[in-house]
Amino acid sequence: MEQLSREYRDRVLNQVSEEDVGKTLRLAGWIENIRDHGGVSFLDLRDMYGVMQIVLRDTSLLEGLTKEDCISVEGLIEHRDEDTYNPKIPTGTIELDASSIRVLGKVYQQLPFEIITSKETREDVRLKYRYLDLRNPKVRDNMIFRSRVISFLRQKMTDLGFLEIQTPILCASSPEGARDYIVPSRKFKGKFYALPQAPQQYKQLLMVSGFDKYFQIAPCFRDEDARADRSPGEFYQLDFEMSFATQEDVFRVGEEVLTQTFEKFAPEGAAVTKAPYPVISYKQAMLEFGSDKPDLRNPLRIIDVTEFFQRCTFRPFLKKTVRAIKVHAEMSKGFHEKLLAFANSIGMPGLGYLEVQEDLSYKGPIDKFIPSDMKKELMELAGLEAGDTLFFISDKEKQAALFAGQIRNELGERLGLIEKNAFRFCFINDFPMYEY
Picture 1 (cartoon, rainbow, N blue to C red):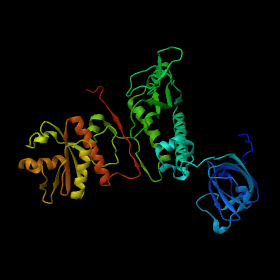
Picture 2: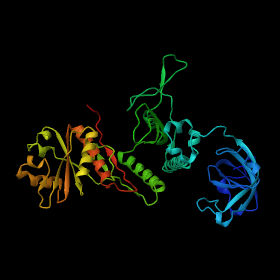
Picture 3: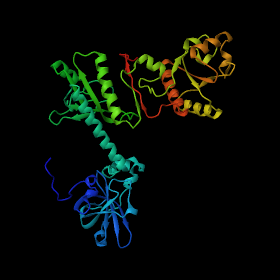
Picture 4: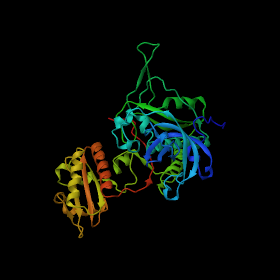
């Protein structure tokens, strides 16, 4: 790459090292901190790549400077005094003795928040001053991390023989899972473009045109409420399509890309699902997990006991779908009270349960409604043993599945059962074509 102009800086901060001691360099960035020790002052200069201590022995250079001013500073690189080493930063053994400072961008009013604590500030204030929020190292690192992941995905898909193609953003409306964002046409009055909710039709057009493998880091625009797993309005997805491919072929590509991406970018020591991933039908997922996006880090499973309770005399369960979750853990009265409060908060009228005693008898308000000759059947159906607690969820089938899934998640969290530092994947298939 051709050498850039050195009008503002000779190099970025992570390129300055002890090898530069004795050299005069020009550096540029933002003032992170100012420390006046009387007779000598210090600045912490920050750019995208690091932090460097600047020494101002000529205190007149400090006049008019404030935190977050953007400056270009020139001076001699020196070793720090050994007792002032800062092992927390790569440049912690050196400093620049400033001979001149040029202000490139001046702060004229008080900052709305401290950069280092911007993540603790109200979101609306952070968004209003986004250019300041992005100076926070954690926020900046998130942006850099996202860029690295996208770059890796692009290279991986290219290595697998996929061709990156950008599909149109302004398009005709087509039915998807949410409402469209629309853009009025200047030329055709009363007509509108729609922003794509997904590139579905375009990638299918590419396949029938003869393009064998396509991918795109695709922007998707959906007028929907916020979700826990994606931003409202717009999000990006790795979108790909293959010609002459079976479902298993698509699964193999997804497994290879996802596993390698997470192995590269997940925290050190994280467990990542190896191929082949479990394939779970939609029906099975809704039964066992109460969700079509199951958290496989949670070992708890939901079972169906509907038919069993239609032969019992407990009226709230009659003619209802009944799901149960087995837990082996000690739970206090306070735990049960908090879990019941959670159940009420999500719309459940109550949360029944049975505890299995040491002699394998049951304890709980539902016990008396189970005939004596059926108690062993429940033991075998749920795989119960001493010390187990069986929670019951009853409602219409769709609602019972939803409630059971939420109770399963809450139990997993409250009991500390969720596998730590792990990423567990599966494929959910055989989704219903229609809802009614």
